[in-house]
Image (cartoon, rainbow, N blue to C red; front, side, top):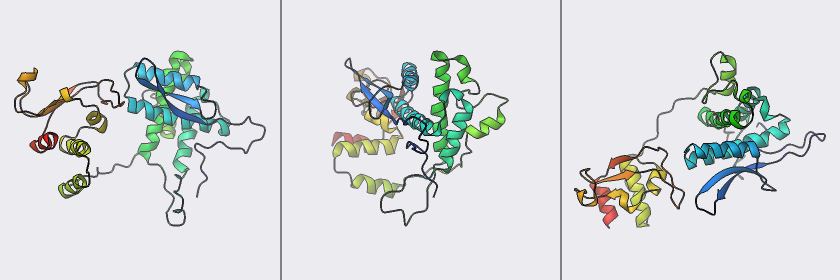
Length: 274
């Protein structure tokens, strides 16, 4: 089995300063709301460049869940740089090497399972998610570091003319059919949930297809579970709900900034009124 190179520091090079382990850290603001940063796991010192990039992403109305995921992936990247004796300012070659090592590094095995399980590796989709987070960092770094640092990157791809490097950074994904929850399985799942609120939320996601963050961010005024909602100032007919992006006390956030109306079935309405 391949030795794990990510994200644990190495002590193989005594002439290299002790590497730092970076972690994603949620920051709670006194004025309300929260954000994400990358900090030293021991001292909680901010990583200046990574945290500045996340701040930029938050300012551009990025989804909280996306920013959290980006923070976690940036923390792994910067932790890996230390024992690899590499500098992030080297750009594309460094990112390419990191992604290649992700591809060959086996995932941690749960205690007690090592003798019975084959090594598991990250999927192409997961590695491209790392690449997207790191690419976003380099694109934003052009604004607070040097413009040249973003050379070779464009969105989550490399600029035209960099074909070989593009292949080094991006990994081919294997298209898999989505796993579907059939009616018996959905019914069995709902029967195991004893809390009425949780049962309603799970049924809502099954019946309407709303995301977890969208469901958890719903408020009473978003639920128009009547055939006629004109009394509350809504012209949409039939039972429905409104998905709106806003800051919520529970940190739930709609991924899309565009509000939308979603029809609701009678079964969901019944669960809500129980």
